[in-house]
Image (cartoon, rainbow, N blue to C red; front, side):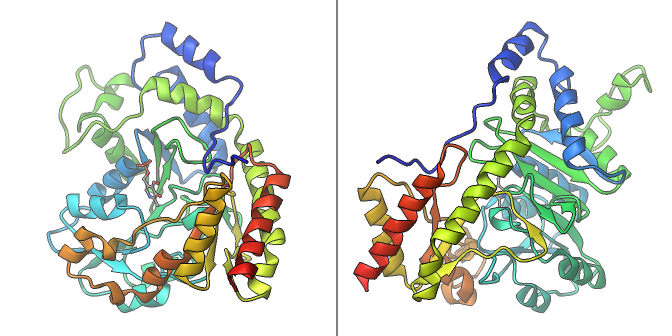
Length: 380
Ligand SMILES: Cc1ncc(COP(=O)(O)O)c(C=O)c1O
């Protein structure tokens, strides 16, 4: 048996789109970038949501943090069980990342822990929608409003997923999405920044093209373009946009297949919870998932490691996930100790992700589940 952990979806029009793109000039924000943006505006509908393509989600996060204009020493809350991008963006913008613990059901930021860490220096919060499962956004937005915090949703894993009826990334002041090769919709490397406020969007558009007013120039609003603000070069390339556009045309199909496998695992693996071997990922009633990740948390680290090895021996690639930021060398430099955030530590020790992608069949999900259940029973 050989079941890989990742397998990207090969959209029909990919090659055609890339070849057609090569015929053109490859100019930034060309035909394919505009096409991808128009497709994305159907995924993220609504008047108060301004979209801009970036070369990665990390760059979208960096842009959002730059627009927050932090003063040195300003604090930003984010979960420790996380990729380093948001913490890097805070540091690069001159702020201090304040690492919070997570909720054991969703592995998303613990609002209780976050609330207890708000100080007079707290300026923003960056919730991650882990596995494409929404944070409890009403409660989070209320907390942010009370504490005057900007909300930057790290929706890297969340394309196609909702909080109630709202696409993830559209609820905060900013949303950041990833099209990295490991994501549901991929163009190798790519990202999206969503801005609630038009002024933020205009500033973001200048930031992404070297801090210039190139957009205004291309719209015929001025006869030369020039340096107007601090900036960088964060736009997605036209070739990646062409690829992205063909992938986006399959978003519904990809999400439906992945969600079906998620439901299959939840069904097949019920004995794991019933017999006390661990807990399956939870999908709260307010969340519509996108099947980006399927994970379970075992009752102990040794059982998790045993099952991972057992699956590997049968050619099934299951993976652990993030080293919590507070356990990392950078976390240590920031003054954290392992037991400061106990749920993140427990998650690090016990979480295992199973293969989930559009090539995974229901039968394979069943075989993987059966192997895990038998492995747990045998382990005792
Ligand atoms: C939660 C989270 N945020 C940000 C990123 C970074 O995304 P990108 O590779 O598009 O910069 C990732 C990558 O996997 C992620 O998991």
